Length: 385
Ligand SMILES: [Zn+2]
Image (tube, rainbow, N blue to C red):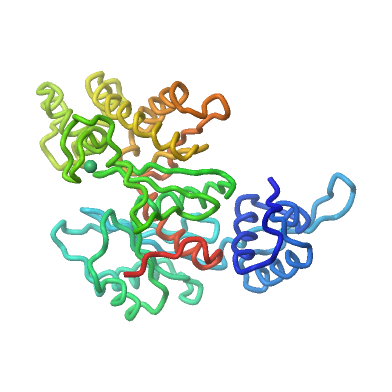
């Protein structure tokens, strides 16, 4: 699809060119002219700069339909790396990615639930993780730390002082969406959304290659979409929030209300272990466990239709620990529901997919935030408290 509306080379042109190359995998300079709407001299200059910086490389030539030789360019994966930490209630997931979003290292470190998040501890972890991977420090573009809630004040400036690379902090669901967008090579033309199913339910939305942030970086509170005005009360102040019916915690509560299921699956442990037992049983033929998850998926589908209708999304990815084992139950229910209810269904299909790495998606996304800020700046200025 041509973007003829933006013909002048400006500060965003480099980001645009990187993004088009990323989603095309390999592309010629002539195709870049067609797809970006930039002039041939502008494309030549930007491509030359990107090659000099090591961000892209030439990958040989190909005979075109007209018999001419074409030089193709592609992202140069291993020239730079981003590091992401996803701080969960029980673990910190550390991930390093290359420029295409490919994972080059991963480690999960346990964390005591009451352990305060401190800059010195995260700095030690950064040192330990990057040294263990033997990543060239000059090629590490930065660290992003993501969590469901805001990090304590002072963590970011403390980290910047200690590790000497740029530090971003962000919301885990937003990061996961950008990670899926980048590593799936989704085109920036696509209205892309990602639902993150965990202890809470969040969403990330990517429009024109950039995360949509809202007025106060709060966009994507999917879990607080109400599906019933007289439904269950939610701590947010509203009633019927979908999180009260479809989050991992809500599913565990629903399963524990069935005494036989509760005993059969030994559901009295932690929320994450109980959820895992339910999901495993559901995909192995336990009808009661299946019914509990299918009910949660149905509620999630109602909220998904609202988001898809509001934003006319073309593609929705499900991710997070809640879809790690039983993602197929959620995907099936959402597909069926959207096929029947999405306002856009007569114009286009809404694709529903499951993340390839749902447990690591937020960590991968954090590392991709660093990559995007480094090679395609201007898209997503991270919140820097
Ligand atoms: Zn709520």
